[in-house]
Each structure stands twice: as C-alpha cells, then as structure tokens.
Image (cartoon, rainbow, N blue to C red):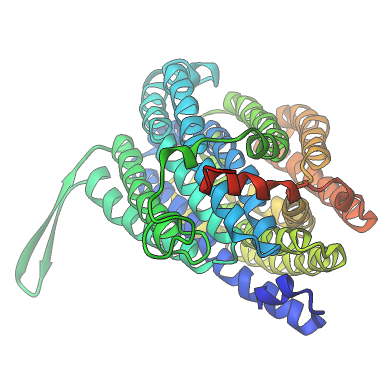
Length: 490
C-alpha cells in the first residue's frame, strides 16, 4: 500500500484508514512494550522501598532529557530517508543512512560524556540527599554511559519506520522488554529458591538493587540496538548498505560514510529545533521535580510512579505519531501535499479516540496500577489521585502528540517546538508553582492537566490552518550527493 503513495495514484478514504491502521498498530505495540519495560523497572525497584523508588524517580526526568535529545538528533536523518523513499529514490535514502550512522554515534558519545561528568552533582541539584542522592548518581551514570548505543537504536528504528517497516522496530521493543525482565530479575534481587513438586530450584541473583535495575535495562537495550542495526544495514530491502541486498556497489568504502554539508544541514534544520524544544521541556519537567521535592519522599516516589503509569495512556499516541510521520513524510516526498494533509487529519482523530479510551481505562484501574508499583499505601493514594486528574487531559494531549508527528513528517519543527516550549514554560510551570504549596502533588498534576489541554488546542488550530505544509524540508537536491558517494567520477 505504501507503493500507492509513490505511484501518485489516488487513495480512497478506506485505503487511507487501512494504511494508517496497518502502520499504527505495530508502532503502538512497540510503544506499549516500551512503557511496559518502564512498568517492570518501577515495579521491581518499588519492592526495594521508598528510598530506592525516590532515587530512581529523582533523576527519571533528567534521563528523559538525554534520551529525548539523542532521539531528536536522529529524526533529522530519518525524515530525509522518508522523503526520498516517498519519491522512490532509494539510492539517496541509503546515502543519507550511511552518513547518519557516524553522525548519530558521535552525537551520542558527546552526550554520554556530558552526562557522566554531571552525574555526581545532578541529584544534589535536584534536591536529593544522603542515600537517595548516592543511588541516583549510580543509576543515572550507567544509563548515560550507554547513550552511544542507545542512539544507534533510535536511528535504526526511526530509519526502518521511515521506510514503512513498523514490524521490526516493534519486535525489537518487545524483545527488549523480555530481556529487561530477565536481566532485572537476575540483577536487582538476591537468589530465589522455589519448591516445585518437591524439587528445590535456585535462581541466582546478584542483589544489586538500583544498580541492577540500571545495568539490566542497559544490557537489554544494547542487545536490541545491535540487532536492529544489523537488520537495517544488511537485510532491509532498499536501505541495506552492505551484503547481498546492497544495490550501490560491491564493496562499501569509508568515504561513503563521510557526512556531507547538505545532509547535515537538512538534519540540523529538523533536529535542532526538536532537540532544543525537548531540552527546554525536560528542563521544565526537572523544574517540576524541584517543585515536588519539598513535598517529601512520598510525593517524589508517587510522582515518579504516576508519570510512569500515565505513559500507558499516551504511548499509543506516540505510536500513531510515528505512523503519521512516515505517512506524511512519504506523501510530502512524493510531492502529494493534499495526501499528507489528509493523513494528518486521519491520524490525529485516530490518536484522540484511542487516548480517550486509554484515559477512561486509567481512571478505572488507577488503584490496581499503583498497587502494582508500590506496597506503600501513602504513595499509592497520592499516585491514584494524580492519575485521575490527568485522565481528563488525554484527548487533547493526543492531539498535540500526533499533530506534532504529522508536522515532523514534512520537516516542519521550528514553530511546533516553540508551541511546546511556550505551553509548558508559560502555563504548566507557573500554575504548578502556584498550586503546589496549597494543594500538594494534586496541584502539580492539575497544572499539567490544564496545560496539556491548552497545548492540544493550539496544535489542532495549526493543523487545520495548514501552514505546516509551507515549512517543509527541501530534500530534492540530495540526488547528486548519492551519485558522488557511489561514483568517484561524479
């Protein structure tokens, strides 16, 4: 069905909905498996006690900052790949991929160096102290040290999605989830002894606590990053850059991986606003953590668990946003702006419907979810109240998430980044600072609910207005770059 976009043939509404569903479903499953992995980490660490839970929660938003920046840095390349695939120009798409690999790895390494350097001080800046600060430092340092490999995982999955392959990234996320369960079970807890029909079975355990949670998750991410890049570079038809499926040359030279000014310039135009926007938004989320910290250890832990639990609602939205980026990106690359706009409307409405249903489910099952994370009643009660406040914002939150994915697909990131930045800094933070002293954690989550509704409204307004189609990326001039890399005489 993707070939219909490339061919220029008209698509009926039924075909558009079917294509949206076909691409969205694996992406939603991938996002759900990702959040399930966070559920597993939170539930396992939650069994260690309030202090260990708080040590993870204290730096969780800081980790999202680093992860998000690395992910955003790869989008600038995957959007170019989507445009060239939509135009049927796989030769240039492979050229962009080759240049993306060293660029993304070096960026991940740069971010890892920064993260490791600040890891001893970050928990103290966020208001942590004593045992909580000590464990937070260890947890944060291990995760950021693995950023180069994690960035390659982001690049591999984004490139596959750009070509329309949602199944492999989804499968890798599920595998990562399974490995995370196994590694965490073996590393977090001490050895376990089970009596099965009279036979005593001992499962070894390293009893590393918070350290084990970090090492286990990083190990799972490393395995999957290696597998996804192997599949992309060797077995993905049209994008394979070595092996039997590579259509460029019999041998790949190092010169072909050298980044060119045009590809880097286009990547920078897309990724720089996204990276800056994510940095300032996560900076705001870190400020929320600072606002919550004076409310006590229980509030810190409850806030962390509630944030993780709420992701179950919005991760399907991010899955549909991934599909929206692919569909609008390929349509835009094929020169079909009307089709891109149509896919934008269909994906946003789909996201709003699904996330509304997820919000209802979260409202009903909030007590069960929080009891999964922690046996401490006070933490659970705070988390339940927070989740039920946030459930009201899910429809409009969906609008902002998916509309953002639509706009990224064509390469329009500057204005959406400003919209995200302004919403969270000018609406959420001031409201949270005002409401937290009198309402406690509920005040912080009320501020979040109001802000997300506002953000959804402004994204819907821009989507309907259609100005995002006028600010897309120009990748039509990349063909000669591919020729110069594969033919030394050009």
